[in-house]
Length: 265
Image (cartoon, rainbow, N blue to C red):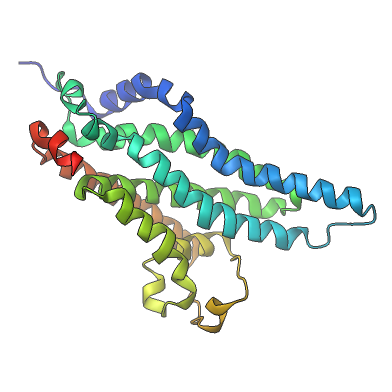
């Protein structure tokens, strides 16, 4: 009997085998989701300076914060996760290719994390590129490390969460979208305890700023609670690990022969 390879060998083999996938259309869509908003902002800034030569960009810092929080964190990030997560183990379930992956002895519980790690790495590259490019729009260099850390951790946690949702529910992408695009942005009007059940709360406490805006949400706003940034970072890291572990447990207990039929629903 052939002994299953170590978890490290499984991760290495799957990352190498599936690496060309990130260079296909889905991978470049993921890259564009983070890079395009920054590129467009550069274009707007150049246009403003062209039309008003004396424009000094006194509001650059505020613009950068809004771009970071409202566009990158609250819009581009959830869409990135919704695009990247189904490319992991869920794709094998829907296309009924998982039995082919299991034709060789592997620890089944490592498969979701192994495929997800590839997409996390690819997305992380473009997150770093996009946030670093904010320096040219007026971002303070001192804020750069925590902004990158915050986005990487929220991506890690949300990608693990969406992978788990995809294995638990037949419509996991839909339920995940409701959480990321509807529930999470309501952090402003949540009482203190509920704020801790949103990803945005921890991101803002890591970064130390928030892209607040006027409107109805401000009228209904609750007092925003604070979490020390190392604790916020640890929460996102551990929550991501928990989701990846739960996804592995779920797949390990899924009848693989029925997985394709279950995925159709």
